[in-house]
Image 1 (cartoon, one colour):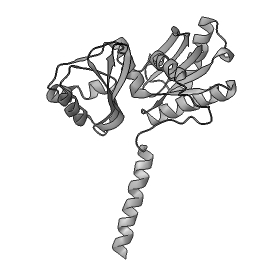
Image 2 (spheres, rainbow, N blue to C red; image 1 turned 90 degrees about the horizontal axis):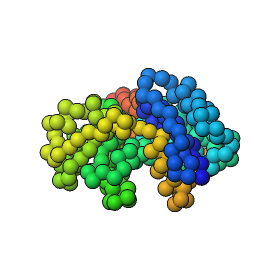
Image 3 (tube, rainbow, N blue to C red; image 1 turned 30 degrees about the vertical axis):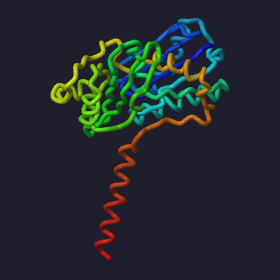
Image 4 (tube, one colour; image 1 turned 135 degrees about the horizontal axis):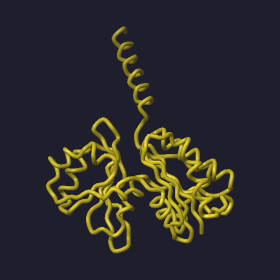
Length: 243
């Protein structure tokens, strides 16, 4: 079983190759690069280094969102393009779930925080029961302060990770009442390896899609869509005044 996994949901660009549950290669860069310029070269490099053929892949896994609108579109287009070319299924893995899966085996609550701007975060709450990965609160977009209230009410130690941690670090210090810690650097951001690892579980459960069916999950309208809605609402108000 061979899965090619990619993640471009944030600043991180990542590609990985997993074969029969083994992570053969992972190429991850957290830097100001355009994902459209980096993802396919990353894929080419890991295939070359592991002497694998793209045609041998059984499925393409991709972080399906939420995250950066541009990044998600690039990831989705790449996954769909590869899936169509190979006639292979696409496995869409929730971004926040994959981020939490980095911390496999911890006894603490896991709370990823991805910066969604406007004082909001993409987040969720997760835990492990032995080897079982449990979603206690599915991924959502919410005010950072609100998720801290929920965590305090659960009364368990928490580990935070994601690019929203440095953005909301001061608020974490002010609002958190239960013990908390931060994931170390090598586990604190999106990784295609985690997307691929979860994709194996999804594949076994039959949770796959055709390349044609796959679509990213945004959780909220894009800035352009919000601005368009605001303009339309303002126009409606102006027309009502004129009437």
